[in-house]
Image (tube, rainbow, N blue to C red; front, side, top):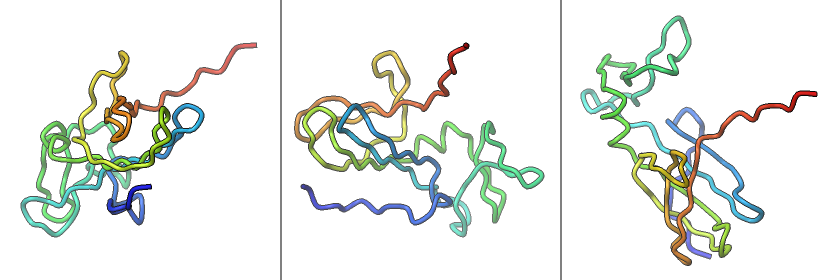
Length: 136
């Protein structure tokens, strides 16, 4: 097993993105992207704007809560990295990697894609979709 070097988040407030899931029968993934420090004032972490005490989830920008600096969603997310701790579903290798925070097409579905360090197979982290319950 490889030595763990990635810093894990202590709380969800530190993360822009976080997932912990299993893949296949014996694979697992924990992935997270830390919030970015404001490039203007360096006093706070950038986040989605807050209106009436609630985060605007579908906002097209990120805002600094200290100075009010705004950055477009696309530009902000391009500057982030996704940290991944994984157990490969194909070979069982336990490893970690850092990839760019950008979804690519993986088996026809937008996903964060990384490659197993041991067997070289591509592994995708897709968006979690709500499953439709069967009608009775």
